Length: 195
Image (cartoon, rainbow, N blue to C red; front, top):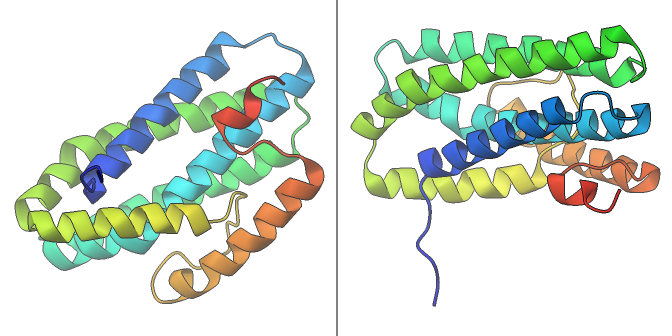
């Protein structure tokens, strides 16, 4: 028997919950060896990039279309994503044994937590009000597909608005996944088990 299709907001709230759990793990594992800190940061980056890519493809275009002042709201959210991408790129380059690495990781998690709270309290209720259940379920399916094809590494200069983000994102995702496979870079919490 098929389980019911989650709508876009349910999918994104589940992502938010998983991100918060990951952040708690990162904080709990402070003081671990540099290799472990790098692995944790790589998973944080991959999870955030996938999540942001899916939001950029479906959440923000929908917000622009159905929420009053949706353009302003979407532009603000995408600006926050762009800042996060820059921080992730710096974090990717930082040596995990340095205070700079920990500062960047802490900053990224703090700003992301605030971003998640803002989406849940402001954006999602407005979308629930403006969209039909059927539209949100269809968007949920699309978000899940987009996350599966999304990049896993930050690309701060990549387009973040349709149609270019929809055209280039999946190709970038394939390249990132090949790089991850070749370098054995963890990109999910499951990859951390046994490491």
